[in-house]
Image 1 (cartoon, helix red, strand yellow):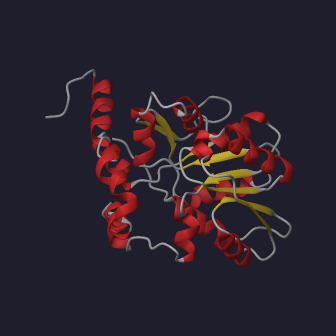
Image 2: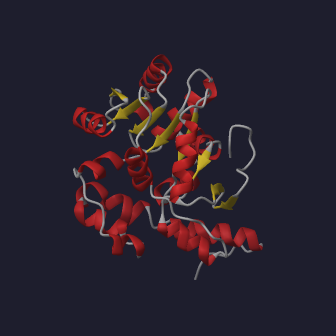
Length: 265
């Protein structure tokens, strides 16, 4: 949903979120147009991890804030081929707009001279690379304290930075759900401008610090397997334990739509 509480004009409701029916190029045009917005807007790109957190972490102290941030985003686009396939099994068309591809297109498109771009999180080398790609822009970098999700002061430090610097484009590279929660806080305060994207590890993929799956694996919905093999120690829990509940979540959601509550066989 957008700031006014209504779904985007062309959207599909799936797993309790309103996803915009946008292709990659349409999403990029939306973001570029929002660079000049006098009131702060933000984009979320839910994937399997996001949806599982939304449905299965009700007891977490951050859960309500994350739910509000995902559902109130100015633009919500699907970042998962698995979600797209599950939507298809439900008779819904859900375009896939990978956050890394959206970030790449925005950087390739460039921004007008004097545009302010803020990178929240990441390393100094990431900010330097971003400046080398956006030569006519002013790239700002803010590295918040560790533990943003559980530290209100760290969250406030990001809010203060964005409000003080007034970037046209803010790139949150501090992971979920903290990126979305802080973006929502900034939007609700109404003191910033421009548009923000929650980009995860997109800059690291673009710089080559991390490798993306080959296109054929991406098209098959196996990017998660490639990432697991690339970083098994860091990602094994996400993909082998935390991710699979998405199928039960989808089954319950589908059953609720049909008036069926029995578990999958």
